[in-house]
Amino acid sequence: MSLTGLFLISFLIIHVCINACIFNDLFYPEDDGDMFNRAAHFMATSMVVRTLEYGLFIGFIIHIIQGYVLEAKNLSRRGKGYKINLANKGSKWYSRTMGLLGTLLLLFLIMHISHFWVPSRITGLEEVEGKNYHNLFILMVDVFHNPVIVVLYVLGCISLAYHLLHGFQSAFRTLGMHNTRYIGMIKGIGTAFSIIVPFVFALMPISIYMDWIGRN
Amino acid sequence: MDHSNISLTLEVWRQESASANGKFVTYKVDDVSPEMSFLEMFDVLNERLIREGQDPIAFDHDCREGICGSCSMHINGRPHGPWHATTVCQLHMRAFKNGDTIVVEPWRAKSFPVIKDLMVDRSAFDRIIQAGGYVSVNTGNVNGVDANAIPVEKDKADTAFAAATCIGCGACVAACKNSSAMLFMSAKVSHLALLPQGAPERKDRVLNMVAQMDKEGFGSCTFTGACEAVCPKEISITNISRLNKEYLNAGMTVDKR
Ligand code: HEM
Ligand code: SF4
Ligand code: FES
Image (cartoon, rainbow over all chains, first blue to last red; front, side, top):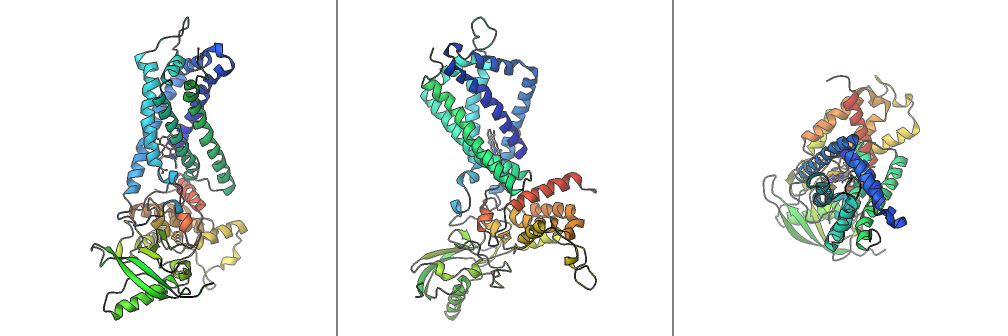
């Protein structure tokens, strides 16, 4: 759980950095997402990255299976429940709802893969004029002009933020980090990560929908 | 402070035996002194029930000074009741107001089956301790070595001592959404892993105790922090990280098996 979770976190870092290339458009509107398209092209064609992609799929699948097995086992341990629960008096709501947050992420992931990964890798996409690579940027601009999809993406990012707010620090403690100074540091880094990364992700559909980028 | 006696309504879980179906029964208790402990309030109620020819409410208790870990009541949604770092036996009735309704339930976990009313069977903890919560060096002054003759770093001694204050009450299991016994386990493992006397069995201890804990059917820790919030002895959740480290280390480097 912790190892796959941390692996997925490392993927998020790369994912957010590459996608953030679309913000190049803010400074060079004539770029038309070319920087992003080139980065995505590299990710799609490099053998190393394609191999890592299998690892990523396996990582997701193991994490999801472990998560549901853990959740089901833990839920079965109580037997009869309490009339009055400890609820928020003992822990944060998002620490207790990792399974639900993970399920929201799973639904988001399915939608997200069908939006971008499927057209880019399976069903095919138009290429950038005069270049031999896909115009993923145009696809992004298309998809994010639907307000319903923008709202779903923002909700997905919020679920991710809460999932990470618990998961980031928990993963380190699961692996045995017990020095209180380091735990404090990891909690700080984890909180910053859980806010910044989903925020940058959420900014993408928002800025496209608001026509801050990709307007020509 | 107001010292006048108060009247309360109790909703208490009554269950004839392990196999019987239980239910909540409501009792009015009047003239409760705020200086009474929560258990003394139950004593007064039980004396009345006995006088009336009814079955008194069964509950666990022994030392009544917060050191034995027998008392175990889930009061208004919190193990050991509303006071921080306090066992039920040391919870006083001044924690409540005149006219309050108090819901009292037993610890709930499949590994802690109800014996009767508010009493649960916590022998799973005993079996975990038997699996490894001991040291085999001789202690005492006659055949053993005086513990104080072995130097121990102050920080380690303090942390070990803090972990050793766990009284095995099971509130951590009762509070955890996963019914995990990891806070208890981690207190026992940390206590002995930090001291030189515990070194000979260090790896076997953690492996055997964790195996026994899993066999008893406790859930897994997901670090929600509920255990630490209710522990009457303020056992720190960082002990669980230490337990994880001890377990990983023992699993990877133990010499036999
Ligand atoms: C796609 C669907 C996902 C599902 C169904 C899912 C489910 C879960 C569940 C059930 C848990 C553990 C429950 C708990 O600790 O209470 C968990 C923990 C965790 N998840 Fe996810 N998750 C998903 C996606 C992600 C993603 C995208 C990331 C990071 C990028 C992530 C990172 C983590 C981390 C770091 C932990 C904590 C591990 C630990 O406590 O040792 N998860 N996940
Ligand atoms: S860790 Fe705290 S709550 Fe758990 S058994 Fe020990 S004293 Fe009780
Ligand atoms: S009766 Fe001993 S701790 Fe409460």
